[in-house]
Amino acid sequence: MGFDLVSLGELLVEFVRVRRGVMHDVADLYMGPFPSGAPAITADSASRLGLRVGFTGVVGADDFGVMVVNRLRGDGVDVSHIIIDNDSVTGLAFVAYDESGLRRFVFNLKWSASVKLSPSLIEPSYIADSRVLHVSGSTMYIGEGPREACIKAMVEARRAGALVSLDPNIRVELMSINATRELLLSVLKLVNILLISEDEVKSLMGSGNAIEEARRLLEKGPEVVVVKRGVNGSIALTRGGEHAEGSFRVNEVDPTGAGDVFNAAFIYGYLKDWGISETLRFANAAAAIKVTRMGPMEGPRNIEEVYEVLRSGGTFH
Image (cartoon, rainbow, N blue to C red; front, side, top):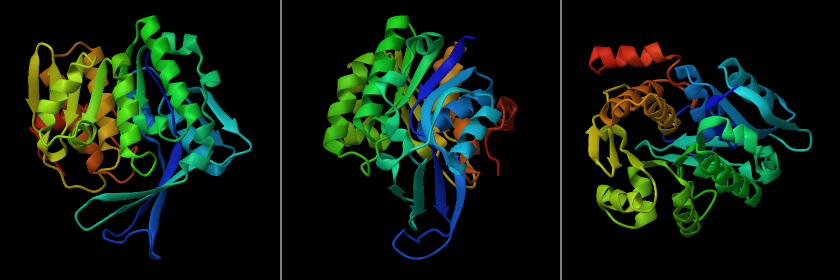
């Protein structure tokens, strides 16, 4: 079976504070568990949109691991390369939003099953059988094994002629910004599609002008750099020009995972050879749906939901 997209990385469950403005340092209620993990969200969302998707990762032999694997399998993702490890626990993330909407995370990923992802688990034929390999930077921040696994997968993908997409997904809770910058800039030569947030551009390049710095990133190897700008939409930069599309007005419930859903939708349109502007608008719509739903993996249930948003002209609740 050939895949449209394969991914690898952390598999975890997430707990979210019920009330905004209540941080992790006080006793209060959380909602969850929700299946999560940045690369897993992209993989699951791509499958729900209709792509053929596979995933490589490690979960613990516990109920949380069962939950994540069942969710991926139920949404059509091939889980034959997900390892169930009897000697570790499935990754956990706790998320709180302050009054302004900024997130604060607490992770156990560096001590979880996810850190057991290693180069030995990367099967070159599995990578070569796909049109796109998607990597989340967050996977590379949790340990040497996952980092080397991602780099091996990227090398194998390029060797096989597959595209490599990368979302930096910077998490200073997992790796310092200086170490993150050095790592990401070193792997850009292996990347075809860079899917990066506006704030991440500034973090990596050290400037207040995200679009100008994104042009510099384009010169480092990718064929397209997509800058995700939240409520301001998105911009794609290629050597042939730049394209911008606005966002959709929504009632925000939970923005976590929106960028990962955007990734899946952009890759979908890119593989379909749509125009860049059409692809951006499609991805913006998919991400907007996610923002209206609680849980990081709760993006569009199918492609028709995205088309409905596009047909509606944008504003929805």
